Image (tube, rainbow, N blue to C red):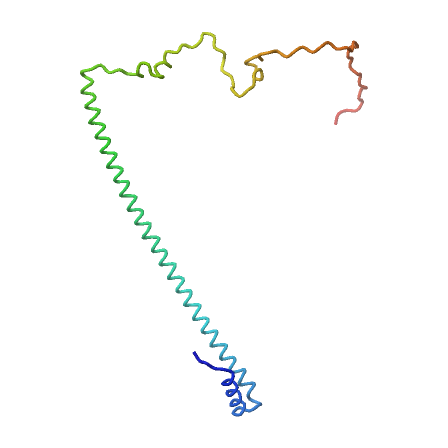
Length: 180
């Protein structure tokens, strides 16, 4: 704005010294500094208030944008839900019509129920269980642990010991103290 250089400041200082004199110049400089400081503080306060207002307006605008977006999404969801309901109703009516057609045709021909002959489900119905079935057991347990299935091969017998002295228990001295 103002283009004040060093030479202009020097001229202002000399004029102030001549007009005010050396005794009143320091007081005048302090007074001028005080007013400049107050003006800056007022300007900063106004600037901060404007920034807060602008920020609040921006937040309100974003909130309104989100609200309209949610309303649009809600209306789209309602429309698609209604379309799905209509489609389901149409399919239900088509199935009912086809069921009536099948029922009318069934009066003329016998209807076979159950799996088709030769299908895996049909074969599974005719499988006969063996007469001596072992009880079910945990598939993850190794054989012999749960007691339901013996081991396939019994453990080998230990070779006879070369030590012929029988094992005898070592006597323990009686304890006179009572347990605590």
